[in-house]
Length: 113
Image (tube, rainbow, N blue to C red; front, side, top):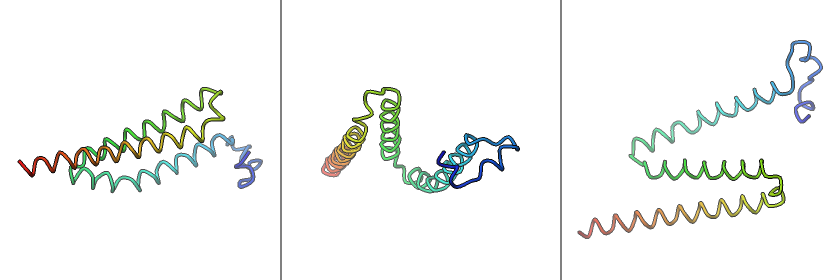
């Protein structure tokens, strides 16, 4: 009923438009906006041959989505969702730092040889 306070749904009901349709439209607009926002970054990463960074970003996204799916489907974890999200984000940050250090070390070793 969140949308009901912004939009008068009683005027849209005779047209066959339900609250779910409004949510669908808002989510679709959000997806389009995020796509337009992210596309230049992806093109830049590809142009700079940053496959490792793209892999990290996509794997992080999959982990975060998986975390939310687990919380959504397992009702017992609702009280842990904030802690689970915090731990997931911290783990992804540490993983990113480890990747940076690892590939910096490899690059350093290549320059020495």
